[in-house]
Every structure is written in C-alpha cells, then in structure tokens.
Length: 568
Image (cartoon, rainbow, N blue to C red; front, side, top):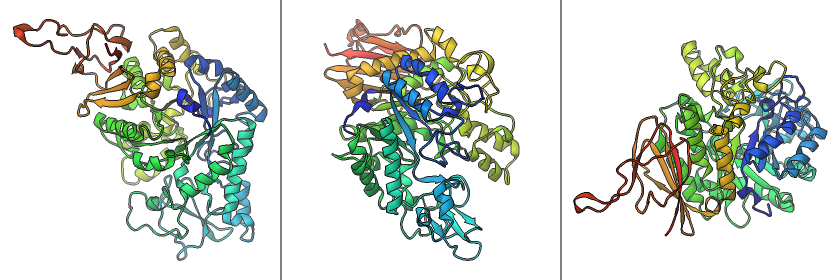
C-alpha cells in the first residue's frame, strides 16, 4: 500500500468459471484466461480482479473455500497461475485476488477439526449451545437462509453462518485466526499478486456476546456485526503486520455502507483499506436486493453516485462499478435491450468518467444481457433456489419464476460470448451453464470488427480516461439533480471542463447546455450516435434585442455526449 498505482488503472473482474474454457471440459479456467490476456490489454485494462479460484465444494461457487493455498483442479494449478501472473505483469496488468476471510467452507480442514471440542480449532468458529432444545443460540438471520445457525449432530451444538450453511463464519476475535489470515496474505503476496479484493470485509467482527436483535427486523443481527466493534483494529493489524510491507492495494466489499462510514475505512494517513465497494447505486430499481423490485429511479441512482463523489473528494478514493458477479446485467436493468448499443455505451460513460478506479465485469464491455431460463432447476445460484423455495410457499410458481429470472446472480454468470460460433466460442464442450441465446449478435469477435460497437466504445473511453488528467484529478459537480431522465455532470481541472450528458430514456428530452457553453468552441469527444447535431435554436444573433441563449439539444434514445470545454 505504498503507491497509488491503482488510481491510474481500469480493473477487470474475472469470474473464472464463465470467462473462457482453455482445456475443453466446459468450465472456464486459467488456461482460458492466459489465452485472453492480450484481449484485456487491447481493451485498456491495467488490473485484473480474480473471483475465487481456490478449491471449493461450490455451494456458493468459490466463496466457500476449502483450501486457501491452492487452485481448484477445474481451473488449473499453481503452475498455470504462475504463467498467467507472469504474462499479466509483462503486459503491465496488475493482479488482485479475492480474499474471503469472513467464512470458510464447512469442508475446510479447520472446520473439520473444530468439531472436536478439545481441539484448538474449536475456537476458530462460533460454536454455541442452543437456548433450549431445538432453538438457535440467537435470532440472527442469514442472507442465504432463514436462520444464521445450523445444528451439528456430531457435536450437539450450533455453528454460525451469515450466508450459506456451508459457509461457516470465522471467529476473528481469536488471535490464531488472524495469524492464519496473515499467512494467507503473505503467501499470495510473496507469490507475486498485487493485492486483494476483500469479501464482505465489514462483517468480520462480531460482538462477543452474540446478543439477540430485538429491533432490526429486516436482517436480524446485521447491526451487531456490520462494521462490528473491533473491525478497524483488525484491519489495521493486517495492514501493519503484512500489507505495509508490500506495494499492494486492497478494496473491500462493504454491503450497506454509507459514504460517511466508508471514510472511517479509507481516509487518513494510515487507512484500513485503499477503497471500498458500496452498494447504494445498485439499488436504483429495487429495495436493497433485486428480489424486491421497484421501478427504476434515475434520481436514486444519481443521489448514490453524487453522494460518494462529494463525500470522498479530497479525502479518499472511490471504487467505481456497475456490474459484478452478484448482480444481474446492468444493461437489462438501467438500460434498454431494445436500444442495446446506445444504452450499453451510455452506461459506460455514466460511470467511467467519474473520479475513482473503475472496475469492468467480464462481458460488460460487450453489452451482455440477462436471459431467462424456463425452469428453476436450470439455475445454479443457491440464493435463487432458496428464494424460489421460500416464495412459492405463498405465491404462484410462475410469478416467482419471473422474479427469479430478473433478479438471479446467474444472469451475470453465463459464459462470456466470444464468437458467434458453437457455444459462443466459450468452449468446444457443453458449457457448465447455458449460453445466452443472443450470442450470434452480441459477441467479442463481431464487436471487435465493428468500429461502432459497444466493445470499441469501451476501448476508446478507457484509453481516454487512462491518459486524462482531468478524469484523474478533476472535481465533480452534478447538474440537473432533479431530472428524471438525464444524468449530467462536469469534471473540472485547471481551466478545463469535461461535460458528460447521459440520457436514461428512449424519449426525447430537451436539454439546455450550461452557461458559457459555446457550440463553436466545445470539442465533442464522444457520442454514441454517428452524428451529434445541435438543435436549430443554438443561439447566434438574438431576435427582438434579446441576448443569445445557450445552445440546446434534444436527446435521442439513451444518448450520451461528452464535451471538452477549455476556458478561453
């Protein structure tokens, strides 16, 4: 954490199982990643975040780890990862790994040994007796199931899991557990990786008494373990004992965090983390989670963007993203599949030019979309299956399936569409999960050959922002905060202004450019249409003695324009 190299790079998240199959078994792997590193370099990527590729029973596809020091056989081994790492570094691409230390798999050696009440591993986890026979130790909820405790008949006690029952929470209060975490960090940093994305890192500290939650009914217990009592102490320990000794970076996943609370993690002379991922901007069409859908609200999205930009300005650094492995495809949510190319490009512009480090999720640069499977049996997402099981107890199955089709994480986990050929060029074998049916028209090969494609728009925009000092250093100011259709913001630095205009509707919207804007001198850098004409009423000589008014435009469906304005 000695340098700030992460501020000048665009990262790309790889969810290995669906990225590219390199050995012909239908499952994405590190061999496929190796083959596609040149593609990432051409995209302009300066860093890769790997979702977990460690051995795992895959109850939650890699986020239930059974061995922190190895590679799952379906993805390869340490030798191929060494080749991937070396080639990435030769291309000036940094590599960070997912560090999942809130929980392990129940098949991890530590947990198996913890079933022995006399073992030193017993206190690696939260084992507790129930209040009464058949009752859990407290009333906390799990994100993936109703209760956060599972009874183990082998030891006649319950263990804590905030997620899947096979994802058992570690007891970070135990110094031995924290030493294990440091060993894991050192192993991979010594191997050559450049940092970590830290999974649900704000949940690792729980109150010692594990009390009942009598007030927070939405997710019982959350107020006790989210940003728990010793969270900063533990993160500072990891930084001081390990991270400070390497030129690395960390970005923490922080569900439900506010910008103000985020500053306690990422600001100051010795911050806990370099950046955090917030979630508020991913709630513009739902109530916290996609399974509780609401009509899309651009105002809600803009408030989230602007609150983070303003709160962290001059104090800390933002992590920017619109897609990852935990959310459905954003083009299908905030954009329009009818206006696929236009909205895919507009969504890129709306966040890639904000202040911070952008993360692009695999396939996002192609405009990959959601797609509906006809039955719940075809979905792999453990959350989707549990939601379906619970909801169909009171709601019609067809209705629930429609919600699943829209909300499931599997929407972002279908194989990347590389070509219009067999299995979208992902694999010669039958893929582990169905390929989206629209791959003949949305794929990397065709888009690479089309200068007006979503892919090539991403390439140009990433190249611009990587070299642009105004994007790196400029202040942010939102215009038109009350608009329900347009997101407009400025970046300003040393007499130069970048004006970003994004329409989130297919309807025509009249927009008056800000004071001082002159059509004759403003430089149009990007537009997602071939031409970007002004309206006829762009000013000039005013009639009836009135002063010339500012130029106007009428937006086309999901139009984006980016202007550079230099002070004369």
